[in-house]
Length: 280
Image (cartoon, rainbow, N blue to C red; front, side, top):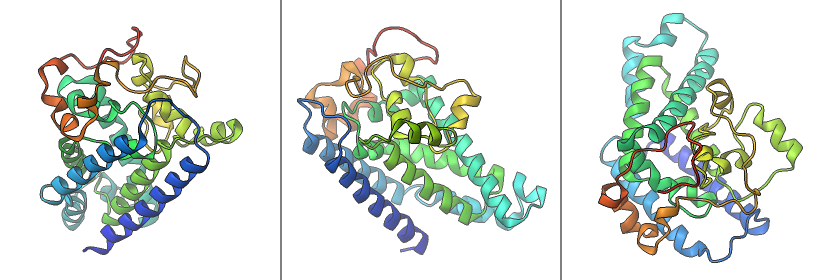
């Protein structure tokens, strides 16, 4: 196995254990009636399905794209002739902006929302939610990011660093944990925090359509999609999508089939929609 893959897997495994331990010892939210074992089985099974599909389709798309573009001198960054460390930093920032918009697009267009809603169907919010994505969304995401790697002319190591940061922040930001307010507010000046991202999983549509950031919080501020506080008590806020709380929708098979269900046909929630709680 490629050393970069082993490196990313090692970082992912360590952070997963750290976040799971933190949640277990100091859980921020305790919601009656939620089965952690059932949720975790579905969520991690989806992760395995996504990893298997990527392995045989576009798993290495970003690294291949980076090597291909670098070998031909393609992209904006090589044209600028910047020192390597600066080029790496700018590539990471540029990719994070691109992924912010990718995330926002999944909420704007029905065909994308159908698949992304699998992530939002989870009625709980913990480290396992970070890996709950439909395999086809994972594949499309990899192709999208590979395109921006070529546009930027990002170095292969910049891609490895960014992907490692992305998965690390995903585990952190979905954690059922809480930071002291002053720490949270300080970090939010630059980075996404669990309290900030939890709002994005609110059952209120106007809150779901906010806080799209992955690593850097500044994109939500720049592009006017930032929400500071939920309208509900943070410990008791309703998470998920109300129309998909049934057992079938929460199962592995139900989650894989969810984008194709006829009763799931509806337009994606639009940014700025201030209607009542999600209807699906």
